[in-house]
Length: 380
Image 1 (cartoon, rainbow, N blue to C red):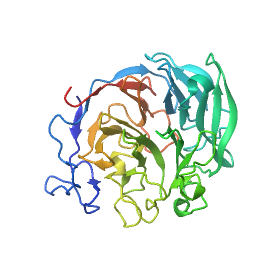
Image 2: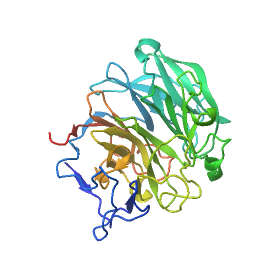
Image 3: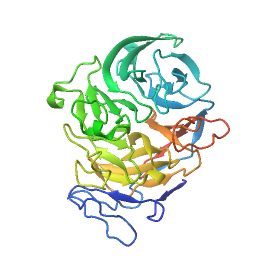
């Protein structure tokens, strides 16, 4: 397994464990902050999952961004710039075009980012998509034809999300509550994140029919605020909601999401500042710039753009229980999306042909690609 625990000389990080001093640095010469009762910040050897060898499933994608699995084990992938949705066979193989989403306006970071299939896809053929428009960004429902040969824009679930050249967010996920969770960016206007009447710089939560769930704070789509640019959403087996967030120049964040809470941006970035809810872990943007995230086998698995690696953060009940672990450093370039396949393996999407975005790298032959990476569970 090609992995190493990140040394302090390579990665500036901090674990903000509940009950400890926020910002305490973890290094070989600094004692680890004390965790709350019941959490062991130094897991026993062999108690953390590891990874097997990657397998290449698909190549030749152009600026792929979102990925969602279907009941038959195949997956749909969105291409940010082309606006296309492609279907990937369950066992890998050539990507099959499904259709082009109408109304997609491309900018440096905008276009067609996140997609997620309806929990009832087998019956309703519905996929939800985040679409960047000329005047605003919106969340739409698409109907996929029975033979996967076409798609139709069915309805708009949410609009009024400010558009911009950068900081669109765009990640979508279906939570264990059956609702649609949406990460938005601040549209490159930091004050949006702290403004109650803006949907930008927020985590949004709506029902799949577009209505606002009764238990949302203030009867609003806004679930939490004070975010800079959220591109990763994942849920633990206990329902804990996690988000990965791109920082500015100091700290990227991993947060546990709680209703109605503020997460500090723009006054606070990671542990630099004292406003908002503290992150459970931070990484330096040069080593991370986190994008997609998934939960599996006791860890969060976080794709890194600028850092060009896969990060593993062991967690338990909303607490980080060990230092982040790095995998595949520089081997595949930028990693945009991480999802857990029906068989329990990770699927990773690289992002090296997306030349319009920042922190790019030269594409490798065959880019962009999807990799399947088996998880070796602790004790196996």
